[in-house]
Image (cartoon, rainbow, N blue to C red; front, side):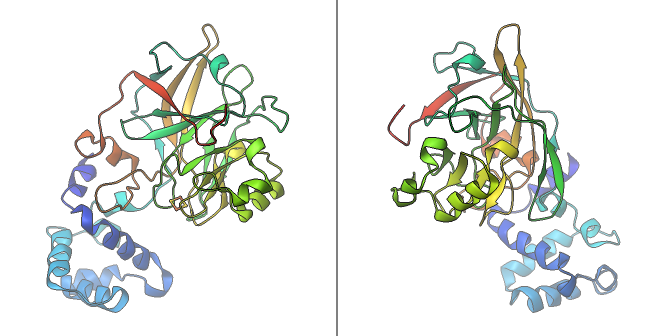
Length: 320
Ligand code: FES
C-alpha cells in the first residue's frame, strides 16, 4: 500500500517512459548496474538513459531526479521504490469484493439465463466502474455446454504461469475474463467473443468490429477450439477455453480472469476476485495501467461496484 501511494507521484504522461526504462534495465545486454549507480548516483542514471533511451532533456532529467530522490537501497528495483508496481507481475488479486451479478433489470442473474455460445456479448463491470469483463457460457461447435477445467496459463511476455480456476455453473462452462485487451487496452465492441458460428472463414472479410483475422482462425483450428475472443484493434486473439491464454499477438499477456462463484441453491453468480496480469483502461494519454492495485484507486479509474454489478449486453453481430 505504501508503494501504491508512492507511484501516485509519477505523472501519468511519464508512465510509458518508465515502462521503457524498466525494459532496458532488465535486458541482459543493457543491464543497469546497481553498484555503479550507488557509487555515481544520478550521473550514472542520466548517462544510462542517454545511452539506451536517447537524450535526457531538462524535464526528463527532473523527472528522473524525482524518481531517485531520497532512496538508498542497493539494487535497481530497491533504489527506485514504486517502479515495481509498473512491472507486470503475476497477480492473484485479493481484497476485491464479493459481488453478485444482476440482470439489466436488477434481479440476480441466474446461470441458466446465460445462453451457450451467445453472439450477444454479456459484460459486467468489476471491481470498478469502467472496468468491463466478459461473462460467457462456453459450448462446443454444436452448442452443447463444455466443462472448462482449471488451466495453467502462461504469460508469453515473461514465461511465468498462473492458475485459472476453470468454469462454474451447472456444467462448469461459465467463465469471466477482463474485456480490456491486454495489448493496448481496447474494450468492447472492438474486442469480443466470437462464438463457433462466427469463428469461420467468412468472418475474415467482415467489417469491424466483427472482422476475424486469418491468423486467428488458423490459431483456433490448430488449438482445436470452436470459438475465440478476438480484438479488432490490432488482431490479438485469446482462447476462452483455456483461461483466455494468448492465441495470436500482438498481445503478450492473456486476459485476466475474474474468479466466479456459483451458488447451486439458487443458481446465482458472484465475482470474487481476479487472476492474471492486468492491463486496464487508462487516462488521457492512452497508456494502459498494468497493476490491478492501481485500479482500486477510485479517484483515477472509477467507483467500486460494491456488492452488485449489472450485466449489459452488446450485440455486435446484429443477431441473437
Ligand atoms: S488493443 Fe487489442 S490488439 Fe491491440
